[in-house]
Image 1 (cartoon, protein in one colour):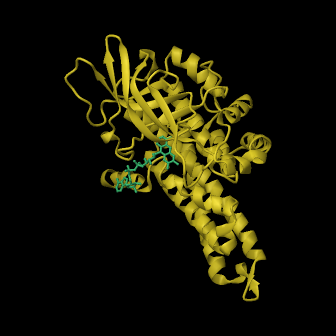
Image 2: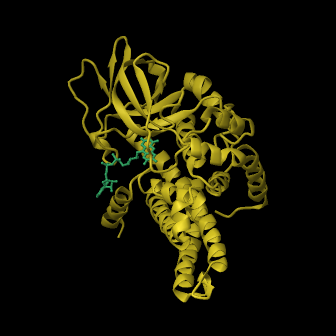
Image 3: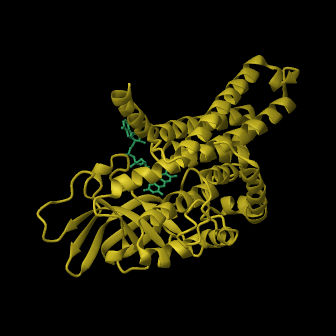
Length: 389
Ligand SMILES: Cc1cc2nc3c(=O)[nH]c(=O)nc-3n(C[C@H](O)[C@H](O)[C@H](O)COP(=O)(O)OP(=O)(O)OC[C@H]3O[C@@H](n4cnc5c(N)ncnc54)[C@H](O)[C@@H]3O)c2cc1C
């Protein structure tokens, strides 16, 4: 993505907002293992940051900006010294709100999209189930359509913002009550917007997580929940395709976050390696160490360019499924490798630090799973090898 002067001015302003609203609180949120998600979203919504790339002409509050702004937004969230805000916010800005803008009817736009752009509502995307997330064909959550409306039953797990969200976009099978076909495979998967205050919805927080501790992750249980017909997003059976499209964008976003996090970590590691002496000279003067850091730097330079190119492709309307998967796979692995090397070079102090070094090591693990596990991405990339080469 070729960033221009306007993108860079935007970067300065986002950085200023995050330094004012997030940075002073972040350590406290991480130690407490929770953050005030609603307050945070409202503050960032007031700054106009939650609807950057949504269409401006629809009158919902979107700013109609190009995806270069989403790229800068992701990079600046990635510069924060903890992963929780990026994880929580990306669900709102880069998954759910684009879905609502694309497929929501008038009611959905008025009651959910507009307030969510203002930061008054927190959203979740609920696809994964306790029985499996990589293979969406195995999902069991089902919405039955009767003459009296839609009733939803099922269970979702590991959902970002899951226990605090005001509404969730739920991936489920939609079947007609009197139809003969039972839910199978991908072609009955449908997206349904479910307000969490409806009777039969139960939200529960996951505790004892490895990383991203301030970010909320929850289980959602639906027991015969009555969902209004107008909360269907798109046509019945269009859920898998719509989700794939929006998860592609999310993967580009996560790649940009992971790259920015890896770069920030590398800078800090190099500063440490210059200052810490072993065997009479700084770590940085030991060639084995300098070369490992140089390898990381070289890889990061390539992944950053590649991720920028993926945003450019998406901005031009290309599907970029393979490219976004490659970017996320490589960027998240680099983030992990960099966090591991950083902890290693900080010695026992890194392990015991209870601060940014150990936190980055824990947080870095998430992107190997969230947004598609590494192997699920490799499966997808391998699929292109069968057809494209
Ligand atoms: C921090 C975090 C945030 C998350 N947020 C959300 C969210 O907001 N919404 C949501 O719906 N889900 C969310 N998830 C769930 C995430 O999408 C799933 O964990 C992921 O898709 C893997 O599904 P699973 O955990 O059920 O593992 P499984 O599907 O059971 O897979 C287990 C393991 O099998 C391997 N595997 C997977 N596919 C293949 C393959 N094709 N070939 C070989 N091996 C393979 C991988 O190593 C994978 O980790 C989140 C997860 C985490 C960790």
